[in-house]
Each structure stands twice: as structure tokens, then as C-alpha cells.
Image (cartoon, rainbow, N blue to C red; front, side, top):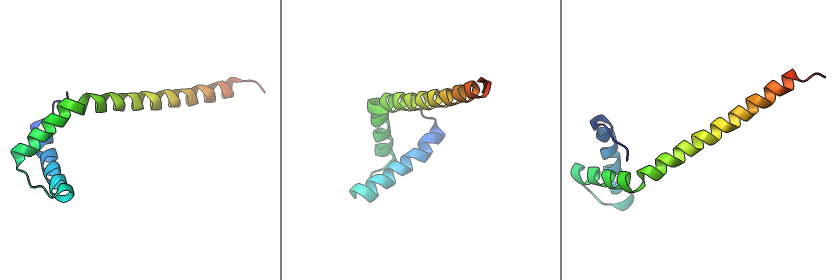
Length: 78
């Protein structure tokens, strides 16, 4: 689970409130929006975190392969 700071919650909670109002025509208070944030964080936070780590790992691996290929190309004698 992600531990959000109070400052992060102060940014996220109004976004949740606005989303619910604009997309679902549902008005909620700050307490309900924070509760929803905590619920999603608990239920899917780990999956989102793991996906982000995998994406970074894949990108890192791709860049490393590119650098490796460039080095080998430069070292090969023509």
C-alpha cells in the first residue's frame, strides 16, 4: 500500500471529488473522497506499483541493450 502524505491527499481528494461529480454526477465530501482513495489504494495500489516497476525495468533493459549494441558496433573492426 502507498502511504500518501497529507500534502498529496490535499491534491488527490479534490481530484476524486471532481471526477465523481463530472463523470458520475455524484457529489461527495472530502471524507468520502479520502475513504475512496484509501480503498483503491488498498485494493489496487500494489498492482499499479508492480506494473510501474515492470515498465521501468523493461525500459531500462531496452536502453541497456541499445547501449550494449552501440558499444559492440563501435568496438568491432571493419
